[in-house]
Length: 303
Image (cartoon, rainbow, N blue to C red; front, side, top):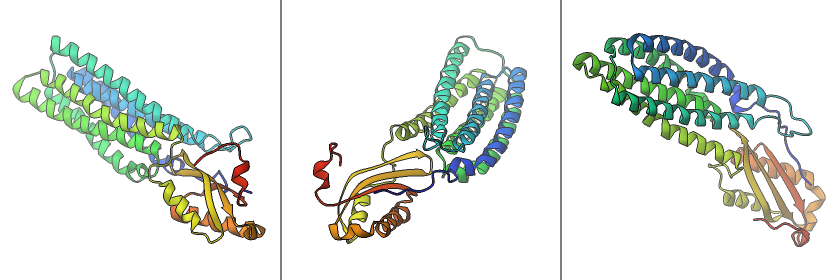
């Protein structure tokens, strides 16, 4: 026998849809200003920062689309709806960041061979404008980044852009005070170095979910121990846990119960589900209650 809960509850990404929309508007504004500023100042670092901001905007727009898709109702063919779309969006964001880093590195190498004239004050002014908006956006996304991997992806992108803006300001100051235009190129490479590890961490977390690995903060041995504390439970096997999308862990298990306690399975299921929900924040779980010896008749063998 098994029981579960409604799949249609609000996901962490959906709860932060308004924050994502606000930040998207801010990033689009910054991107336009940075592109104009890069054309005026001739700064590769500022152009790289503008490209990063455009990528941020694309990523946040993709995140909003994924949140909308994830909110669509479940069907017989897609029993969990489209909630996994949020994780796919996070993976795409990470891949786009890697592509951006490659572009920055390529352009920086060309600039090292053929230096260009750069306006230091122009770099600083535009970068300061972008940094101000980045800081505001980080505050808007901070709480949501703790709940949703998709929002976390947007948060990391904005953080990377904020750090890049700081680098552009420093590079602009050097160019302005010393006339050494190669500082602009070096800042471009620094931007790429900042982006890569954050993109890697985001991609790794997304792949972890897509491979249906056990949630990082969950210990299955501890889960099994909690279930075994029920006086009627003899054994637990075929215990699996994975994540549909950020904030939506699910679990399934075969629970061996004493013969004399199988008469009141409804009460027992309520108690076991309450245990999983209260201790491990698993709102959806499917439990098969079975008598001792049933395991010997099952074809598959799992932990």
